[in-house]
Length: 527
Image (tube, rainbow, N blue to C red):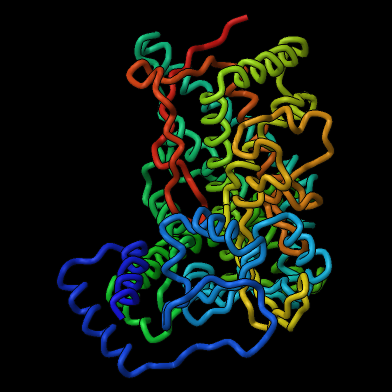
């Protein structure tokens, strides 16, 4: 029994540190639960994938550690690219190779296209009525159709281009101001903070028609950061129902509800402003009959008013859930991808020089950076692909759930099984990638491998029916922002840490960030 208690304490500690009093309380309750609940949680005698030894009650939860994508990769080296785990009472299949994902998605995409119930998404995303977390069904199909056709189509993404251009220009001017004010010996900038504000401001303007603040310290910014953090939280009660009281003890659900209520109040006020402007005819005066140039709230309100024309009826909460999806994907994953790319280029100065030479050659010849020019920057795009391979923003893709029993690689997987795809492990799989742990953008030169769901070894945005519909919006921002930063400045580590290895450690969450903020020196480039 001692190993079980030790494993339980370690698992809970990874979620939220406790006081001594809480540990004592936890010990008493756990002993009582162990005495009165002797259920074996045995799985029916099926032909299941290989599985590590497990504990009663916990199953394999204790094996996840603080960085589950790392832990699951190590387990996959022992038990294979398709593993069966029991996370508390939740039967789970973990896929850790391109081949396993191809067999799962190509032939069983519909059967594993649903999402498991998530109390976190229910609290934060209006009963999971967004696109990312809603279960597979008619509502999801119609909501995703709205996003693909009306919010995130290539035409719509291009219509938001002026917002991206303006915000990236403001970022460049801010960095240039810091550099000229402080001089060459003290031109360090906190690029992590600047990139978060950049991507958040772009999404705010595209989705809401306004920014929250100029300094990034508003209440709305704080709530959005809390929202993104909460999305990556694991609730004990979802895996071990008899320990659901632990979530009450830590107060995590209360904090989630407080965050959700704060954001709801802000979004409700903004939507009401749009409704009033629409009622008073102010938007018609500005845009006429065209939807071109309108923000996401305008578009969704128009769909709400004319829902019968497109086959879906959106309520106010549905609108807010979809907008929050955009904030989670459009802010956190985008800034994380830019940050990791800059970190890898700083860590690999030869690749940095090669990318900058390419960017500057193309821009200096044309005179101005445009989307068409960015597409010609083959080495920059290769460096971004390589970053997605090594650092997928969401290393464990949003879990799926099987809605019926399937046969997979000779194993029988029952309905109701959770599927976890370890995109991080797949990107570092030596069976797919040569020198898999090295940053080598040249591996993608002349290659047709991309990250848009056609190649199972590179799936940072997901795959199949559940691929992220915002991939175009995200990549446009990532590529343009990086090209601009690399064109205008020479980047280096501050003198105090120059010559030391760059710390590339991670911090846990649904989106994996660098543990330490990226502080770099920026010197303006002149022809």
